[in-house]
Length: 435
Ligand SMILES: Nc1ncnc2c1ncn2[C@@H]1O[C@H](COP(=O)(O)OP(=O)(O)OP(=O)(O)O)[C@@H](O)[C@H]1O
Ligand SMILES: [Mg+2]
Image (cartoon, rainbow, N blue to C red; front, side, top):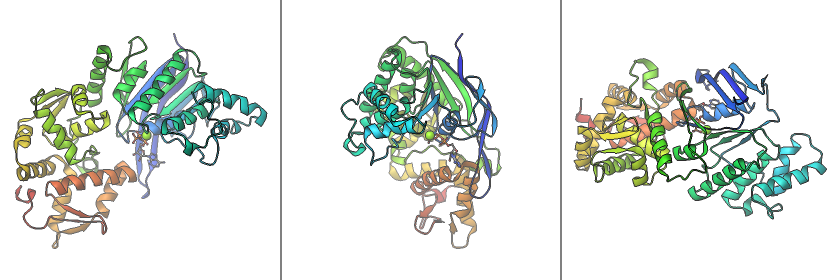
């Protein structure tokens, strides 16, 4: 039996938005990180992954439930838990050595003891010789190595990595990930357990002993999957591919379920952030050989050369618009989806607008509100506020941005960015004819 290092019991977190509305971001999270394991955390944007990590690092407090580190309740940052962020967060005027020493300074270690420890961490992560360099003299991959050295120098038992490889180009990210895995398995790291937030399913499967999927609104652990494959794991091996398939199925489970229960909650739907060109491109690829309208997502991801987050967003958009079914990691075009792909541009736009009006309640709500106005214009403010109450300001802005782009394409409504005004499309819109 492995020893628990970090335990979460019934952890919940709410945020209050600018207008005082409370929103549940995390709800009833039970999770134990054990000695010797790497756990990957997957979830849509806004599902609360970073919030969960900050709570585990003691950087912010949960407002329900309890976090225990080595059996003791966690009330703030502790020595044993370190975190690596996506953005490198280095001080530009400090050298590599000084940036890494900062981690120790915060712990109150005298300068004479800091230097050798920092030098050792820098060497461990492969930056020996760059101690005196400034961040701007380093490549992105090297900067992130400095960020990791700064976390490792405090010898954390638990290392929390929040999309630590996402800001890097693919090859650099993979190299850094593989180096860390090699250090981990070679016993060179002080760390006993890692939790890694990832936006790549393949990365999660290659790294982890266990993959967790966080559902959104509110964030709950939806499912987990143990990864028993031997290491090192080749990303392109058959075993990894099969598991990637399985995780895709977990991530897409229930994707086409629609929560049309009326009221603000139904309107404030988190739209997948996919632009129209990407949605169209995916539909076309899916219709074409070798797929002929039916593909499993990993095969489609390889063929399209898209990162998982982007592929999933476009696949969710097709499903949301009724142009495809998304089920257990498979994507099939619906009969309407086939018609859509075969149609010329004006008809496509009309179909797009029609589906947007019938499948996305907020689009219909805005359209109807505009039709009530004598001049067909409305400020975006009320809609923005309605969304922000459910999703928070940042996500509300993103949803509105996506919706506006879709609505404009489908001729459902227009938007003037400068004045923040929504308007009915001028002169015979495509979707205007659709009731
Ligand atoms: N300090 C805060 N105040 C108000 N809302 C917040 C705060 N921090 C996070 N949120 C909201 O909580 C939700 C979860 O945010 P979080 O950053 O944890 O998501 P995430 O899963 O890490 O997303 P991403 O994949 O985009 O990084 C978001 O809707 C976000 O807007
Ligand atoms: Mg995040």
